[in-house]
Image 1: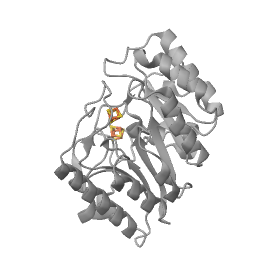
Image 2: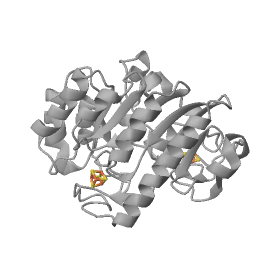
Image 3: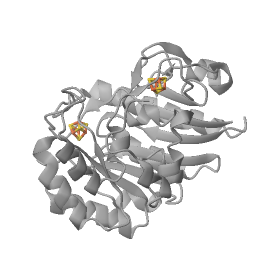
Image 4: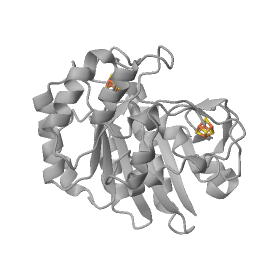
Length: 300
Ligand code: SF4
Ligand code: SF4
């Protein structure tokens, strides 16, 4: 079975202090870090064991905080990228950590979801990291939160990035869905041609969604939820396994507004825009479908 697993351990700390983030400049105790390390290592071991069962895995680390400053996330990426039955391993990162460790990666299977946080790093420093990834042949997407104060920095980054590196902008929705003026939307779409896809919260109640069937959100302890939004626990990875967890489950939430969720709604057909880069939000090339994107897409 082809399965996508999001993994989030006990880590909840970051070396950055983004004002829009609850994990900014938090520190974890030594005990919590040790717990997180053991959770990540157990997950990697379990993933390795899935080859025998014939499963093919895509794995996405989305820690609360920055993972790559910790050795065990780097080791997990290397180990997973070398497993034959692992199709892809990706991680959300602020790219603050050095990249020399990436020598050990199988670059054909990894991808980075790199987020630029103006105010926490300089454009030059962030670009230097992007250039290094580029030089090493490691696929990555770059993105930023579309808060008004960051518009100038995002536009400047777009001008400086290699043209083949996609820059996505996350619509800022914390203050409701009318944060942007029409002019601002047009301006942001100039930078991110797919920004319109991220603007709405999609109506999802009762709709088909692959989460809970072939996509799972795994917590460090092994408890599994179907997605980022639905808090209900559907089982335990290490007790139930993929076969025990998988079931068709229509969405139980009214709306879905987060990329890591709505990309799993088949009706949205988002592979048309992202192709094989869907998981890590890489737009591979301009497609004819982009021309049909409405100016302000209505929720489905
Ligand atoms: S880099 Fe990410 S995790 Fe860290 S403070 Fe900023 S938004 Fe939060
Ligand atoms: S909230 Fe989104 S990700 Fe979760 S089940 Fe509904 S559509 Fe799927």
